Image (tube, rainbow over all chains, first blue to last red):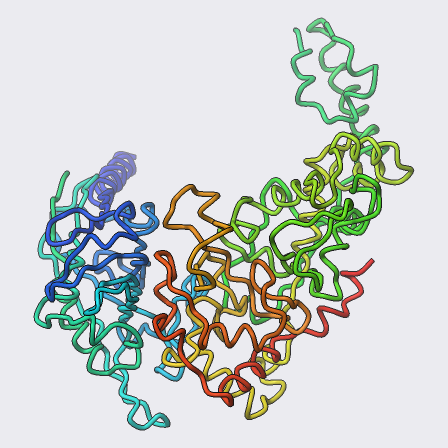
Length: 243
Length: 378
């Protein structure tokens, strides 16, 4: 009888211990800025930003895909939409408490970038045409800029998997998604991790983007897509972490 | 033991029973006898007066089920056989208009994919508004639930409310309409069976109409059949689809769906470069945000063969005019959508052959079965 009671107590002790370790919660909060100046949807539709090439720029649409957040132990992806302020936070529960390296993929890697299989992304028209290899946009960034004639002109900075269409019957695809590694974070029961998104970096580093030359029809532009991917790698950084 | 407070939670059939609505004061020693009697009475009354409507099974095309998230069916207005049938009867009934000369179907004709062939529809007094009547189909997949060209109404139920009283449309008084329905030989019973209440009001009328509208599904065009592997496209249709999907050509897919979004609309609001200045602010008049001026909902490009004239103001009578607009006719303005390419050159400048092929593809999205479906007709 004593053994049974002991076993019972130990079971309770262990299960409570498990709960303690697995009740970590993290909120990933994507905040957006332009070289440090905060950007929200209230800043849309105004040629108030200046890119590294000196062009006045407005933002009218800014939504992007992240996937494979490593602290989630199953396949995952999220569409962040700056226009919809409620769509810029991701809350993850039932995590192990402790320190963990936080990583995610910008866009979909080739394993996940499968044409037409994600109903929620199809429903918001985030697809890439099959003539460009199919799958999904990584990012849709639309706006206006002042061109060299001081006229308003449109740009569509759409990031997808790079595709070389030299032979349209045999597309050469290059996975231009990339991993963002934000380093170690301490996960507690209510951890808020700010992920800073410097939009200006898309036009800046290492490729100074000339919107007068590269503005629309960038999806089929193999070289432009590789440049976008390179510039994207400095867009994301770890901000404030609060417990 | 005082149990009269139980009354608010009783079904309407019980409340209508005088024996039940009297306040009860029952001694503790008799409570079980009373409860037994009460339950028997409730069961008896339920059998006689309560009717449970039959859930309606929405006929979702395979392509929709494969590619899209679930349609929006409000929790407070589930589809039922009785509700849909009642909504259909109301949709075609001229009793909803002030002088009983027009119904919803007068401007939303099933033969025209539930629009009409007028630029602006005339109401019962011969007046017209300044917007083209919108076709009605696949409305349950409008995930943001913003309806009308300007997104003014949130939910189909809300949308159905306004045309009845609009002076340029059915120009009726809702109170008169509901009184006429209440005195009708059939409607009180039909409402009772659909909603459990024979007391008719505008809320229940619009709920019924919205139920019917959610059943209007168009998903069997030639292009759907092509995607399902049932038919082949002509060379022109195939090339037209390629132009539609080519960012350097039509670039239509960013707003008008694709093989992976069979709605053929994003249900969002865009300024598609119709005008330099605006007499109709569209979404901007609803939100009050100047950045929304000149924005209107992207209509689905299904069933274009039946839905001329085109655009929110019905300015284009043919598909050729529509294609020419995007090819050469774009007008700059501060709110023109960035997805409109080469606005300073009027558009993407398609060749005559590309235009013809694009038109052939667009017409392949015409759904003859939808037009002929007797379930959607009077």
